[in-house]
Length: 284
Image 1: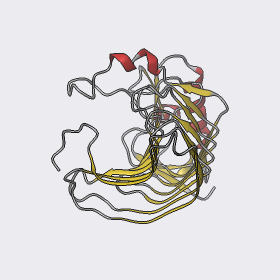
Image 2: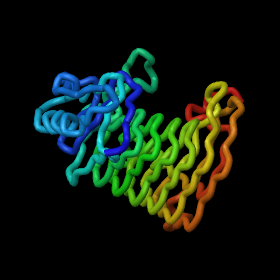
Image 3: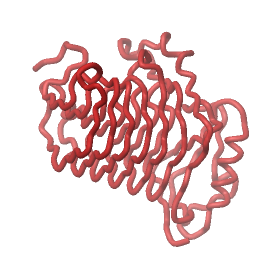
Image 4: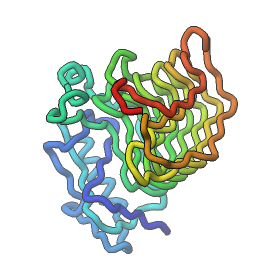
């Protein structure tokens, strides 16, 4: 054991395959109460494993709490399972008005990975997420492989895997069929490798939306290879808000892209849109 994993957040949510709903849950499993020591030297691997197992075996909504500190773990944290994460979206989609009413709380994201370093997430399946299935923020050296994300094409804008302020991320061999971007990169996404994606239905693979606020981080080093799009609204897309703030996007590579029945299904095989305005009510 040679690496130190640092968690710079007040809490970190991990969801294993038998946990059906993520949010600020009713049951909290605090690693400190099971003996974790945040001194950067003590091996906490067994403690973390025990806490995750207890959370997985319990019923209802739950939260794994990792207080701020430096925790020594094994070199690579791996989340793996062949089961399904059921977000139970149909129970809430038609009743949520957060997109129109600022007083209505947004629905929960199914899987959040914040401030994760040197980890692998593999062979997980998400179905019917209430909101975004996978959100990745401030992560580094993380590999996602064989992730399956499924939701009806007439569901809300559920999306697939969303990245922000993260670097050296690999997304390999996923199947993403929802209503939203199969993969999307927000500001601060750097050195992202996306390969062998089966995308559709959905909005395609997108850089953006960018330029919503001042001083956004650049997006760079983005490679998409050997991906197949079928029945998507777009294929490859770069989008900035209408009347956007200045930022930079550079070093993007797209290779060996297949768009199945492109004239019938994919409306915009390649689109760079600097007047992105989904509400149609933006200042240009």
